Length: 356
Image 1 (tube, helix red, strand yellow):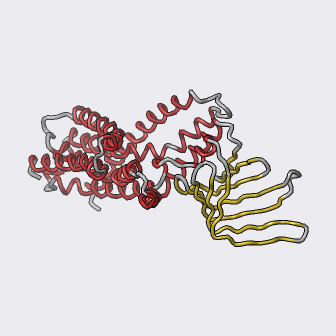
Image 2 (tube, helix red, strand yellow):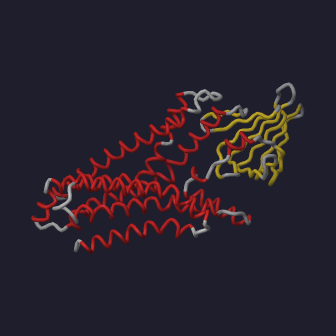
Image 3 (spheres, helix red, strand yellow):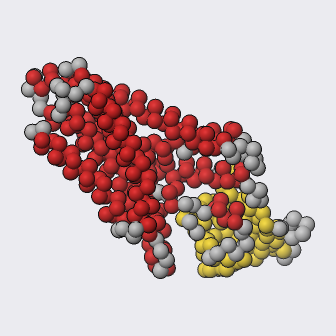
């Protein structure tokens, strides 16, 4: 790796990390202020509010990544341009494309990491934060122990390993006891579908009945039970689409479509998750011609101001575009990918104008 590559990467990464830390601190502080209004409700204390903010920080990082990338690139390269260091690199024979190549490689790495985080890291943290908050706020008769949910209904105890989709539970155990608290029957199933708040459809059930004569074991393909859940309990167990990974969203969309149910909201959420890394790449490509175009006649401060305005607009627009698409019944791919295409088109036009 050339010295100029290392120098350029160092400048970009320092600016990117600084911008990311500032944005996360700002948005975490805003989220903490929002959580403060719930402190004192039920068993929700200040420590729970701080825990909620920390667990949801990766999701905010994912949402802010395109803006942080845009600002980090313009600040990092803009400062080099302001000190005439980019001009010196060009005088040494390096083209703008060659100077930007290491930045593009780092951007590609960030895009891949964002995709991995959206699939494996962010969803379980989001779900844990949501469940812990709802459990602390409500008096639902539920407990959460190591990401397992326990529900007591009369003399029966229900353990749910984890919700897998919005109305499907996995690794479900049901303990049926008599009035004296002695175990009378035990049911286990790897999957249970909630037909409504009352009816659970258990799949591949293993049932054990305990009596003085011993243990009677049965294997039942399907079993329907009335396990009435109140709205608080169902709200804790069910997962909103924003907390699901792209893979689970895709599976749930297929389930809804097979049932003939409307899946527009979940399709939009899936496309938004898939497009976020692409938005990061588009923002990075937009920043490069902005820096290299007006090196001689525009200060780094003005470039940073432009980047902040563009970043704020892009962040706000990205937060409302999904709702607008659903409201006006636009196809999700067109709704989500059109802004990215516009950004790429502007980037290509600027690059051509600068004679890259």
